[in-house]
Amino acid sequence: MKRISVDDLPADPLAAAGLFHQHWLAHVEHQLEAGEDLLITVPSADYTHREWRRAVTAGLARKHAPRRVNMVAGEGPAIDATEAYLARAPGVTGQYLET
Image 1: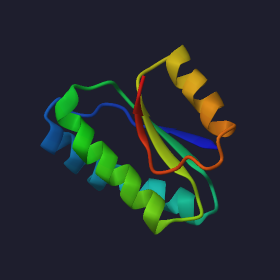
Image 2: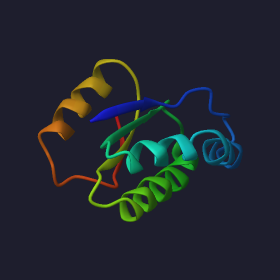
Image 3: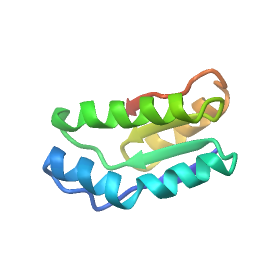
Image 4: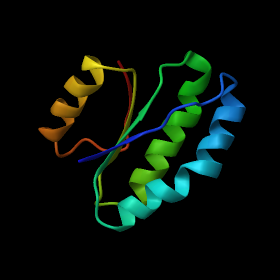
């Protein structure tokens, strides 16, 4: 599973979603089309970011099945532990997880 770390997202959820779509979406889709399963990591954010992150992740998973794609918010060892779990859980895709 390849990890893509998305950083420098704005605090405003609409701006963050817009920036993700403008600057990251094409890169993510290119990796999925190349046959990579992905773990997208994003910084922790408050609840106002949850819906756009869920929608992006679920939409990518549906569009690029059977490739797996999940998004995890957090940092450090928590991200690593979640990545290790997902590596052993081949049926988990399209999920947004917060650590």
